[in-house]
Length: 304
Image (cartoon, rainbow, N blue to C red; front, side, top):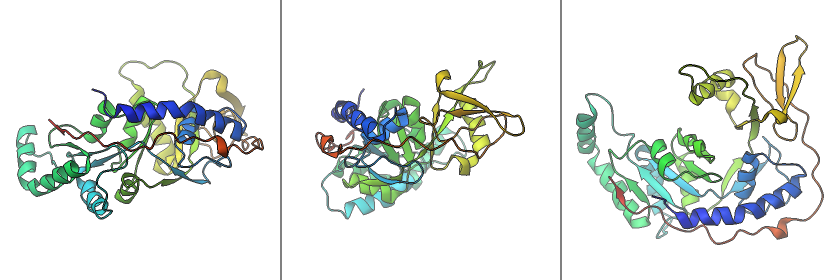
């Protein structure tokens, strides 16, 4: 079942025009990451964003919340006095279920211990048009991936595993409850424009190795600090420049108009690719068309 199809259609209808405007503004080809980011600007861009420096207002397509963080977020949203959320939003009851005995026993205990919380979340969701996934209906990041993620979209979620939706080509970012409330209330969401890390994969995977192992290896190299404020993308062969550092180690960098830096398993490097090309001059803000209001409500059903 496809949820919030009108919203997805609006995103796809406006994206090509926004990408064309952004390409002319920055003066060079855009990565998929940049296309999605520029397509979700709150207002028409007047200047090209500087990766890792510019603060930009975005308009995410949807919001997801888990049962622990949703409580305060929904309390704050209720104080806004709005009849319904401005963008499709969902609540997923999974975090308050603790694993102790077994699936059935743990689920029954969670329903008993957190009955008041679940009743509150369900009633508020029904009142404001928020999709509600009751206890036992699934883990938030997998439910989002299977039901709400779509290529080219942008979403935020009050859960650290929100980036899992990126498996379908979506920019999905974990946030705090206050950010979620802003978006649900129809306000812009501010974010520092991320840097882009290019990843060039060579050879083939063997045995039980999977894409997840590649991700874990990259995460181990970068560490949490190294990945902060950056978005990863896979490079095609033609996008890679091969260099050698002073020690003779083979380093691979993304083309300077595609990536800011690249880290490879050979060794860690803090060097940077030369800055981006200077953008062309020209007033393009007037050609920006936001299209129909985001609007729309989340899935109103109580998922089983």
